[in-house]
Image 1: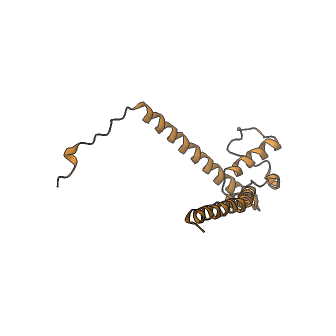
Image 2: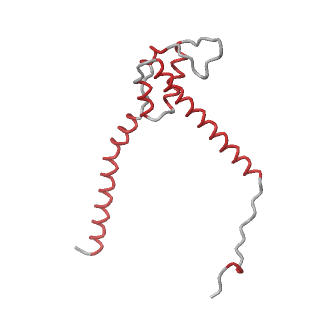
Image 3: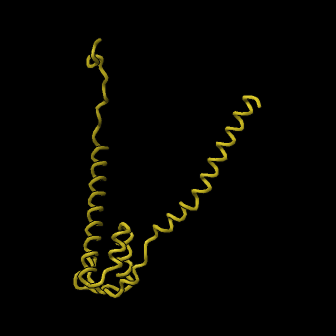
Amino acid sequence: MSRMNRNLVTAAAIALAIVADIAAAQPAVAQRSATQAIPSAAPLLRFYPTRLASTPTGAAEDQDVWLAKIQGLMAGAPPLLQQSLLMSQTPQEFAANVALLQQMQETSAKQSAARIQRQLQNEGVPRKPSSTSTSDTPQQ
């Protein structure tokens, strides 16, 4: 077998291995996406009408609206906290879990607003071009 043929066979084997790895990875990626789905908040209806931070004072929310808000809180939470909320046994546990998720959501919103504000401030400030002078370079 000539050297050129060996290189061609080697390249074909590598390409085949890459294709096989990609094909094998596809089900794993699909499975990972499916496991990251947000569980239903429907079992938490037993705690309705627990007041949420976004509930207007003196108003009672519709059950579907309340459930959508709980589902939204769960969507932004890590899986461990989602399960903690779903496993709430008492109204006090439920309220504590909701308070934690609301605090996380508020903190995330504040951090995003601060980041956007910094970006806007940085865009308005002209930057000095970095100068590379030879006087800073050590002489040998």
